[in-house]
Amino acid sequence: MMTKIIGLTGGIGSGKTTVANYIASKGIPVYVADEAAKQIMELAEVKDKIQKILKTDILTENNTLNRKKIAEIVFNSPEKLKELNAVVHPEVKRHFKEWLNEKKAYPFIIKEVAILFETGGNTSCDAVILITAPEELRIERAMKRDNSSREAIMNRIKNQMPEEEKMKKSNYIIHNIELKSTFNTIDDILKKIAKQ
Image (spheres, rainbow, N blue to C red):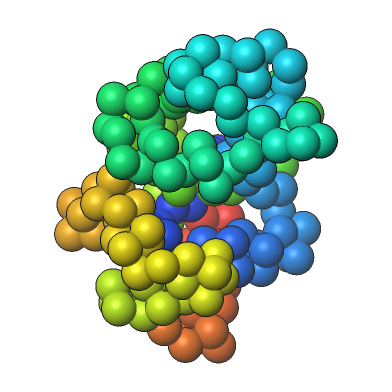
């Protein structure tokens, strides 16, 4: 039996990480694409490619990527963001395939991707869970978490697909406003997926 791939997505500040951690705590394998991408981006050959695309020094003193600087560049330039994604996404895809291969014994796994729909990643999922919350709440959460300005968060929201569109494309929608209710909804969804 093939292991089902369940996509987990949501805009900035929706609470994807909280949900992913909760699911992982139940012993279900969760692949966090952003974390994988961060590790992959630190590989020497990938760093070189990124530096060539951004045409500026993007390394810190200890030779790691200056993520804040990269974010400032790419979230203000759709073209640069596209070029960066063209380098990182194929690497993440390859890494995910290897990871999935190790999880064959599980009936389903969760693949957490912030820009699942934007990259067409939903087409390789058996179902998609969308985490959503009112925009104002998402902005507040993200500002607090990232210690970022409202403008920086709004820029990132502008680069993501509108919530209404994501909702139309999702199999399950979780309105993450109050945590207890969110976790109850997740439990119900996981039961449904396990039965399918």
